[in-house]
Amino acid sequence: MADLSVLEAFLAEPRNAMVAAIRKDGRPQMTPNWFLWDGTHFLISTTKDRAKYRMFRRDPRVQLAIDDATAFRSVLVDGTVEIAEDIDAALPSFRAIRTKHGRPIGSDDELRAELVRDQRVLLVVTPDLAPELWRAIGL
Image 1: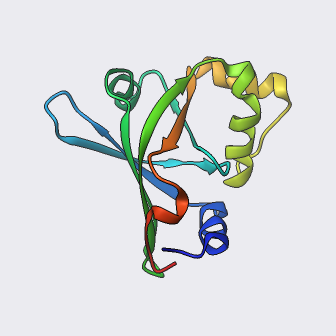
Image 2: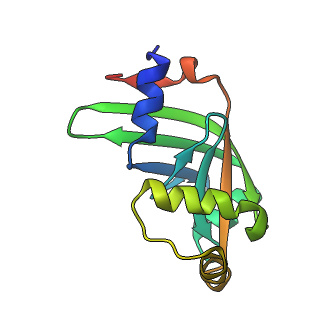
């Protein structure tokens, strides 16, 4: 079990989460994504043309691996994905993800236009277990 304050600090750092979905044939499909941990959910931006969008519409099970290879620290989280497609409602989350990862952001209108153009959706991951029960290595 990781110290929760250390875990929160680790998740607040700009890093990728490897997002694992399940293909129709049962094999995993993994991609690195920026994320935000809001204390309850992992928020991950993706687009409707990505394979994981289609896979999570079919099967909402997910595993996240958040890694720091240089210090051999990692966290594994199993959960369930809900897809939030209302850009206006998710605008603060999209802004927070980009801010965390140092991406420049314009006005709300500029951000909204970009999100609509790119067909962005928000993956809202609810962990199966409380953070103190996640598999954490080196934390």
